[in-house]
Length: 82
Picture 1 (cartoon, rainbow, N blue to C red):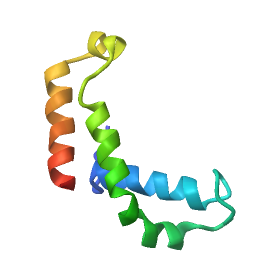
Picture 2: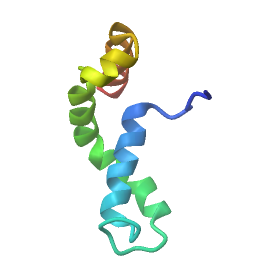
Picture 3: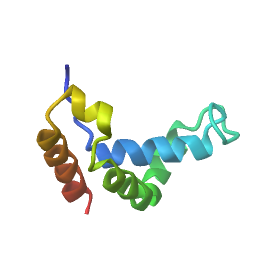
Picture 4: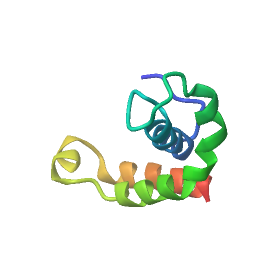
């Protein structure tokens, strides 16, 4: 699987901005790309909240893989964003 060059928190913040602005979600702009580019930093606190929630895998996630690796990866994403 390829890795993203964009930090996870920024990707989450961009999704949150896009959902607010784009007509593909709750917004009204049919072409919100440039607005998302400008607005995503305003959503970093929300992105961090999502990451903090993701620190602990649920039961099915834990059964599928290495929970300690998951926790370490999410903690790195939090540190990158802070």
